[in-house]
Length: 217
Image (cartoon, rainbow, N blue to C red; front, side, top):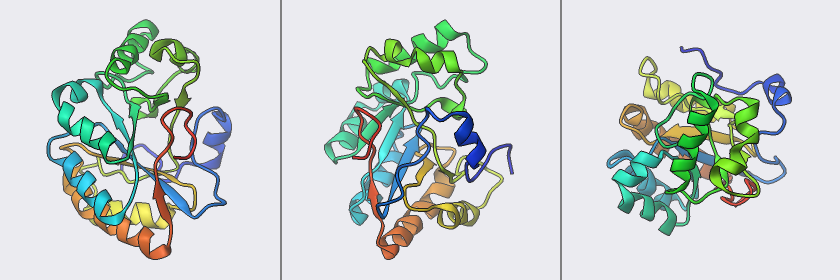
């Protein structure tokens, strides 16, 4: 397994309390998120599955992919899901100069109208986070992290392992990460419908995050 947490540890959330890691657990709801799209195969598959289960989700889109597949991006919004900014070209905030990183976010904001931002690889500096509202030209912005990682991007894992990550670690209020990308699709295709079945059978709602404040949709 790669160098990442499947379940975000409590101490990491304490170090970065200003980021959104999960939602309040008082409601029987979980929050599915999908990174790196739109993709011409993976994203329509995800949308079809969500529709079949009456689920809502949040798609953290890469700007260049929105430009490449505008009709899929429109479908995400038209079907009641919310979108978030995942940068224009997917740079690593820890390895990119601040001005270049923030310009990249600003370019994506030209195509993605949202106050939600998820940093690629979960890597963003405190300075970059403080400058987010300026980069996206909004009064407020929310850095959205996650509580549970499916790790569907990891080609060393089996589809069954990705499903286990989701069903074993999700609790009420969890923000869960999948990827609607070519790399993740072999695992996503197996994992997503089974995870949706699991949550429906538990009686948990599957909701999106509000694109204006980072709150519940």
